[in-house]
Image 1: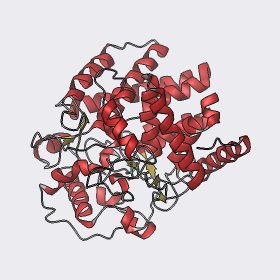
Image 2: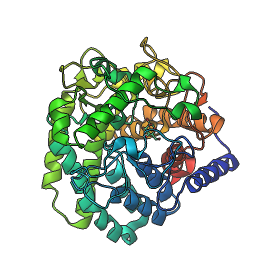
Image 3: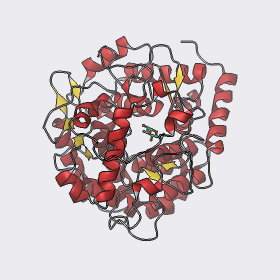
Image 4: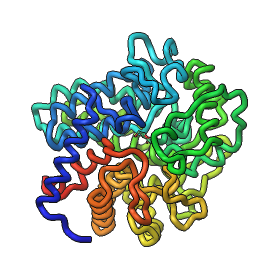
Length: 430
Ligand code: GLC
């Protein structure tokens, strides 16, 4: 790869800042105009990582708006619907969370499911950029972050690893990880609906109708049970322990310990969560594939998937028994790392969403974890690939791992954010 000139780096840095401003809706950032017109949970936390590189005040605001949408029971919804937008399906009416006991009164309209909990990680990062000036804002966020992590441990951690109740919770919406659990039930009684996503981007880059029917069926299940955690745990056909959730929560909990120390708060409870998550992560290890996998909690089966989430253990803070060999094989098989799914697997699809393409946010977490663990060559390879993808193809939602083709939405918030907070040579200098 060629090294970028200073002028080129300046241009990319300034384009990334422009994208964050462009997608700023006043206090919160949309992932991209059109396709995703609301505030998404982990996208927003990543946006804070990007803002922290040049405007710490705005980064805090992003995290504050995000955490203000927290439900009374501690759950942080995957989408907050700050204003109506007919261009998106399923909107607030389909989710029907208004009046759900777990939500509580007076909160912003939202979905009824969550997403990977990276907020504490980027709150700590924002503090690192802002020093003592941010201490009050960090202190105000702390109880909400504690409540969020506690909710995960109370309602999703029965196997030690963290379970998802809907594929969208994992953030890896249509990964092959969920195929068998999704095929195990019939989406009977799904009300008629019109998709909006395929009006914004090429259907070849989006999930299929069979998947979509089941996504909506699960939303209806939640609505019919009033978004009750116990109903999901007892009766939903879909419950899968997910490495993305498990390792992001593990990392965020370590970062929460860091926050607690800064604020002089007790850390025992958080340390207990970390120990449980570490034990839980072992249940996700797949001997056959030599990496972390997802496990269907209804059947006990591992899914047999090598994905980019398989390499998040380092980000989670684990050092022993990590999937180094499998990582080396996947890196050798992909022109651009890290493919969201194993290129050697017949289910690999280079353009279809989470079944092959490269995502900058996953690269940031995998690479940062590798770097911290001392695997600097692998970490640098992933960062250089990310730089090349963005330099050659722009700030797209995701990229084809074989030829770099940009896919999904354009001018994407979290791609710009990881550029500013991690991939850019200027981020490395900072
Ligand atoms: C897609 C992604 C999800 C992301 C959302 C907004 O649904 O799968 O991870 O949060 O888009 O960017």
